[in-house]
Amino acid sequence: MKRWEISKSINTFFLEKSIFSRILFFCLFFIALYGAVIVFNLDTLHSVLDNHWQTADIEGLKKDPISALLHLHSQPPLFNFFFWFFSTIPGGAYDNFVIFNCLCQSLIALIVFEISSQILKTRVGGLVIAALYLFSPPVLLNSAYAFYPALTSMGFAILLYGFYVINKQPRYASILIGFSVCYLYMIRSSFSLLAAIILLCVYIYLSRKVLAKTFIVSTVACILLILLSLPIKNYILYGFFGSSSWTPLNFIMTFSVKTPLGPFATPEEIRKAYPNLECKKSYGLLDTENKKVNGEPNYNSCYYIAYLNELSPGIIKNFNLLIYLRNIKHNVGAYFDTPDGYYFLKNRDKIESYTFAYNLSFLTLFFKFHQIRVACILLIFYLIYKVKKEREQFPAIMLTVLALHFFAHILTDGGESRRHVFDIEFTFYLIFAMVIASWRQKRATRISDQSKSYPNAIEQRL
Image (cartoon, rainbow, N blue to C red; front, side):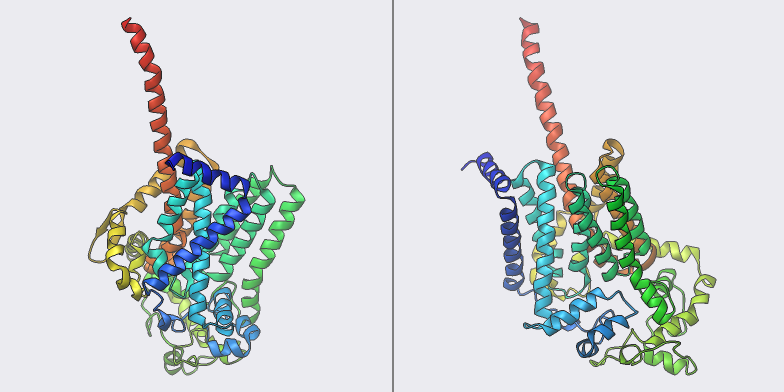
């Protein structure tokens, strides 16, 4: 069968059986990705599951999940909800996390497939772009990493897809945008309330011509009610308005402020160094114990809040602009580093040769402390150029989301941006699809112009 016939049959299949075809492709993406993780033995990161500071004490979560999540002030609750859920269902917490990560990545691949197919005007092209994303080293490795990356990336993918269909399916888009904004705010403290409000303003502006005002107002009101429930809960229970009590810590690291015990003092060290320090509010083991049951420091301790409150006045006082600018420079470099090089991805050695070859396709430059993906920088510059020249809605939305993500990290907790950039990794493949579409359009125009000028040239000779 010829290439154009294959493309025609796939397009026909999607038009005639749209829902079934999407479910089928989602299942195929999942089987392919999960199969690759198992075949290449990438699911070997069990040790990091309960060792990250962001994870609450699993025994406390199992014993009383509602109370534990309510008194979790160090992080938004959604990640630890997943952690608790996967620990209680059959199959083991880590293995369940890997399956869920693969489901998230498969949904992202389906969204990449949907959008890039329409950008390229061919389902075959969309399938190729989706496959390039799905089998990229960052996706393969992070699918086996039981932490934020895959979960957060899914939130951003749903968000962008919501904005992509807002003109054709405004009510469906409203559900997707509302869900993704609340989901991202409840799972990552780096997705701020300010970012959520900016995106809601964009939603209001775009939907005002396709939706009734009462629907928009009620939708935004429900979203804001959900968003504000978290900082209000933290204010009532612990005396601070925000999604995470670690916010001062992010600024301490960003500004490189020297502290008596270092930026990551354990609750045990804090209580020894500050014996008179007291928690203003505490409610149980989850926010009072020095260590979790597995022996790791309990950074959800109320003493950590008291310690950071003690240090907060010195953050601005010891601020040094030159040091801050130097840190931002490092954060920008880290943002365009290869995400597969993040140090917790110990499974990288299983596909090291493949990873190296794949990174070369991103025009990666290897330095002592950075492995900069030049192609990603060029793609973002192309997107800026496209938005400025063509002023199309979706590229502008994508650029807005990228800008919010980029500045949120490089200006605050950007030291680990080679992990954070995975949140929006899929957008590079969408921009690449735009580049190909633009090249094809220019090529078709040039061929058309040549075909028109050829008969004129013959006529002039005669």
